[in-house]
Image (cartoon, rainbow over the protein chains, first blue to last red):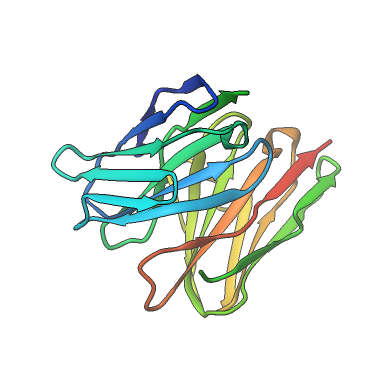
Length: 111
Length: 115
């Protein structure tokens, strides 16, 4: 399967703690994106990181990319109950613009 | 970012009927569109890639006669689920990429329930 792997599959933390999710992919990429999906809803774009970038920040989000290891991580700092959702990475395989999604991490932030 | 709109956002249909889902790029010309399917509590799986004016390319295991894709214009692609069955119930999402774009933009998804 081309699908990327994410870990952990599920993560439960207390409000205020940090949450880290990891994503690994199998092929060379142009860029990688992270998305959030609330239960039964569509995708919300969080951040895009290009293959020549190593780290990117957006508010409480920090994304890293290690192309040598074919992996990326998403860090959510000072988590809130509203961050409860599933998080997916999606890798844009080189030259195709086809996004291959990871298996997802279900994050639960307890108030 | 660019806007991609899907319609309908949800649909319930009877087994054996066909359902059409539309994906529109509202403020850019989408030379390539992608269709994904998501089963409950699972990730999104790419079904097919369509380029304007040409036949869609389907991923392995996806039945092209069951999932008809038409990309007749630079702003519209349609996915028709033919002779739908309960196992086709799923969340379908499209994404669209412009000619000069480095990323694809996603629609809000369509939840299909076949009863």
